[in-house]
Image 1 (tube, rainbow, N blue to C red):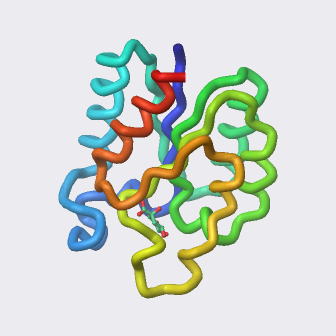
Image 2 (image 1 turned 135 degrees about the horizontal axis):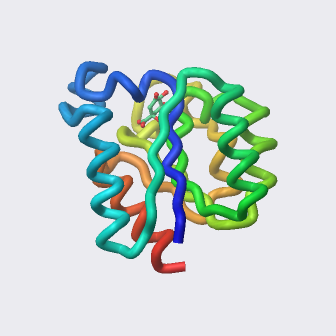
Length: 142
Ligand code: DQA
C-alpha cells in the first residue's frame, strides 16, 4: 500500500528550527526514518515537504484522486487554512494528523484550532518525530 507523508511550512528546517520544541532530528533524517518505518509495516512511503500552500493542495488533490492514505503535518496551515480544510474533506482513504509538538499545550491560542482534525481518523501530537511512526502504524492497521 502506498502512503503519502506530507509536511507543511518550515518543517524543511527540522533539526535547526527551534530544537527545544521540535528536536534535533533533521528533515532528511525524518524522511528516511518514515521510509524505513513504512517498509517494516509493508507500506510504500513517499515523504514530501513544501512551503507553498498550492503545492500542498495539489498533493492532497492527487491523494483524493488516487484514494491514497495520507499522514499530514500541515504545520501552521493547520490552524487557519480553509483551502487545506476543503482539500482534506475530499480524501476518501484514511488521513492521520501529526504534530511533533502538542499544539494544545503551547502558549499561542491560535494553535488550539485545527482544520485537519475534522477529517482525521486520528490525531497524534506531542510525541516528537516518533509520532510519524505511530501514524504509519494507524494507516497500516486499517
Ligand atoms: C507543528 C505545530 C504547529 O503549531 C506549528 O505551526 C508547526 C509545527 C508541529 O509539528 O508541532 O509548524 O505542526
